Amino acid sequence: MTTTQDDLLPGTRRALLYRIALAQTEGRVPSLVAAVVRDGRTVWHGARTSVDGQVPDQNTQYRIGSITKTFTAVLVLRLRDEGLLDLGDPLEKHLPGTGVGEATVADLLAHTGGLAAESPAPWWERSPGSLRPELADVLGEEPLRHPVGWRFHYSNPGYTVLGALVEELRGAPWEEVLRREVLEPLGLHRTNARPEAPHAQGWAVHPWADALLPEPAEDLGRMAPAGQLWSTTGDLARFAVFLVQGDDRVLSAESLRQMRTPAAPPEAADVASGYAYGLGLEVRRWGERLLVGHSGSLPGFLASLAIGVEDDVAAVVLANCTSGPAVATVGADLVRIVADAEPRIPEPWRPLRKVEPAVLELAGQWYWGTYGFGLRLTADGLASLEPLSGNGRRSRFRANGDGTWTGLEGYYAGEVLRVVRRPDGSVDHLDLGSFVLTRQPYDVDASVPGGVDPEGWRGIG
Image (cartoon, rainbow, N blue to C red; front, top):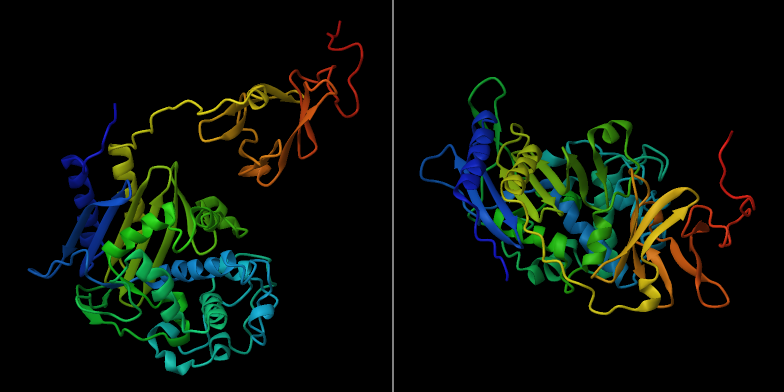
């Protein structure tokens, strides 16, 4: 028997509409559009506007600001997957003479390169990109604010440098490479470097009066890879699906998992607020839920893309105002509304397709000293090691085909689990990064480093 999920229930749809209506009213936004994605497709779209008869739809473009950085990061990861660079490469290896060549590609992706947050004056978001025709004009005479790799410091020039790196290795403009390698394969035909009708006008809303001021829509020139793009809820909904599922024509699911993994040492305030940064993606904890995505802003526009990977729910929120609603919070709320009201239906449990005796005998209880763990074999071919109680170290392991297993997450990510056997072929212990796991706590019949007292366990009397 199978179970399908139809579109959202009426109560859920009303709750979503109420949330964006509240955001548009309280945030005093000329217009706000939003979309929700579930099971790989858009299941809801909503819009609120202050202009009667001009309701924006899924194809109305808004400027998305720093969500552009995620697109640029995808291009860089493509270069890595093709072997044209390594994330550990210093920039100087591929793009010499910038003055920030000590920073690695990974540093720039994760905002740990030490670069300044902004380019030198004038204010780059409200001035023509033609004022900064060269990379040196973007970086300025003193491009570094911190030692390379020392701390997370969000940097718009850092992504400008990554765009220049893409251009150097592809031999073509960033915009052209993006269209050819990402936008066209994913069918994002309404995502552009420049607005195409229908598109929203960017506005500033007076903080003390219900009055509007049009914002300029500057071409950012060299700074484009950090924040140039215009897009729609329809396109960003499709992009959200890609960021979870991957598309081998563009980037694999495994590389996207790496992008979603925190890569920068967070500031103390970020630890407290549950914020981290991966490779071109923000990672935020909202209550008990972990969301990945990115926010964006430029004068006249606010944008948010939030993905609850575990819930398989994503939300896009776009608004045409310089300040007002906290669109990241609105996006998180849209994900929460759907995930809580209509939780994801679990996939049916299925048994292993094939049971190998040499692997099956590894299942069950193991002890690292006196710490108890359970090792479970799952239908996806992985082994899961979890503490029997408490919140200790846990990880899934992938079989390597030679009797060893490699950890996929947490403390044991990348660590190798080996099965150590006795001369008769029976299992003596598991070696996990030199830690010994035995069937009994300090098993006297196993090879435990330091040995086990021959008198065994005892009481004190």
